[in-house]
Length: 575
Image 1: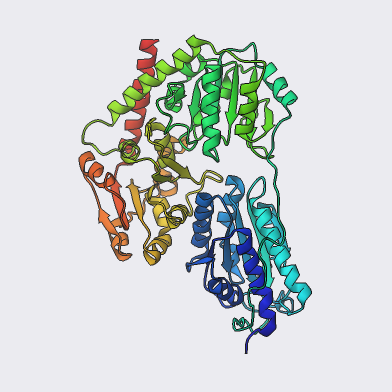
Image 2: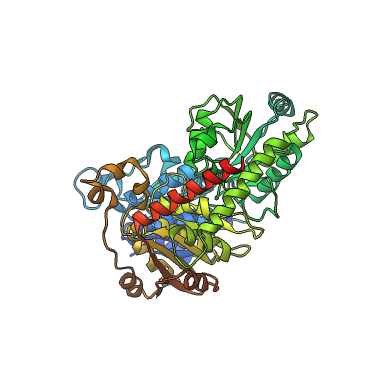
């Protein structure tokens, strides 16, 4: 027995997603989700990916959607399967990644009465989804076929519109659960989208841009700051603006401004290291900050702008929201960065940056980069050296996905400017250590050769994702810095709590990385010297491999602090 004519409800829904532009769906096995899983798999143009772990699956879809910049669907069965999507949906919300979450559910008569695998899935993700809808139970009625297409098109449009994010459609299903794919014209007659969403971009009226620039026209010591940015067009525009105004650019490692800049001397890569010393930081008083994109990784930058007497603090975001944690008096500008910059370049009011101000930053950046390069000389394989060598080995178009805690901070410090246009990504929406292997694997699934750089706890947290890359024979290089615990806590005040530090914060689990790698069929390497590591990462990525770099947390803390001290002393000496 199968669903008969009611199958058209599902086939038209899935086909409408395809008409809207969907290319990928990630499915986790389950019984109640059978109608969706089979229908997606039967569809001729949507590629299905299957993984048993829902939490990992959701981050995998997140990585694919982040790479493709378009919605990816998720399908799971009822019960706690849907709950396991939650962390990735939170990340999608904060990092603005489009997902279409399709949760199968028990029919209404089997809810809230003790039936197995039935939990309350109505609006279960709260405000972390842009749109929720409880779908009707499938029927063959033609009006429901139209309804199914309308909801599919609406979900796709909502997910990718203006400020991308996740949407949830909850599907209650009664038995039987098997669609009938032998029906004539099973996918319907659609030749285009049922609902076409036309989304405009935020931008200012020219008079508003004139007013904005007018506030800055007599100020000469400005800084353009770039957090994570969505597109190459924005990056090129920001370079043009810095040249036109003659001001420095603080380029966060995820901004795509630092790499591929063709030697733009206005790009300051080492601002985080420069600002670590409070005395040096307070001696540098900008007139204004113009920030594009999300907040940078750098904590010293945040402390600096909170401490100096800014005249204007302007944050440009491509969509409405409030991504501004400094608590400063701020002008929030909602506009596509490229659109705003083009208006600024055409403005009758122009800024003229102070050459001495720019020269000061350029000289400090040169000093800091010299010290950073000196710190990675020799054969000792430090955590900073790993970040440096990964950047040096990368070629134009390569993808490096960076884990949170220490790896992203090391990449921010040691990934210096270079002419090759490499892509560095991370999950900086919620900044968690969960789902990092899965997200990187999602990038690999879209055709990229990906290097993932993360710590040992992050590796253990998402180990099951390694099975996805093995199942689909993806090209993935995983570089694990194994300092046997949470290295970031060595730099935080908790480090002084000697009695409980290792138990609660250091958390050593003695991970058997080699055994774990070989258990899932990955090639394994443990380089002992810098030269051995260089030889490994300069080879093209082919298949799956894990490189374990063993370090010591206390030594790593000493290396970093000694470097910061040398940078400060050299800047003060030269100044």
